[in-house]
Length: 67
Image (cartoon, rainbow, N blue to C red; front, side, top):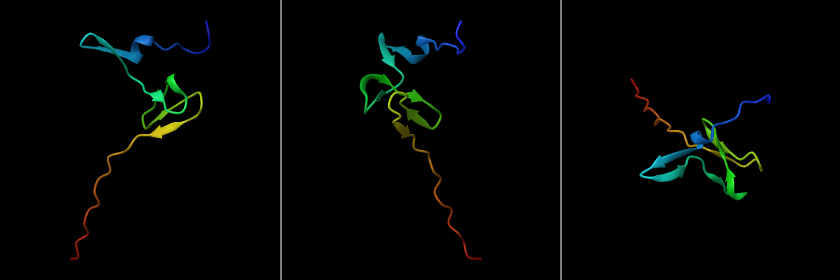
């Protein structure tokens, strides 16, 4: 047994209308075949180090009223 737990391959794919759909996205620098890891705030490629940050929904600034 190794030190690290293995990841289930079934978590990386879903079946939608009879088709297998990949959950991750390919790295734009490495090309097809290298899937980027999904974190809570970004996608990261472990091979080349490329990172894409997810956009946050920012609340609009509250207007200040002069009273």
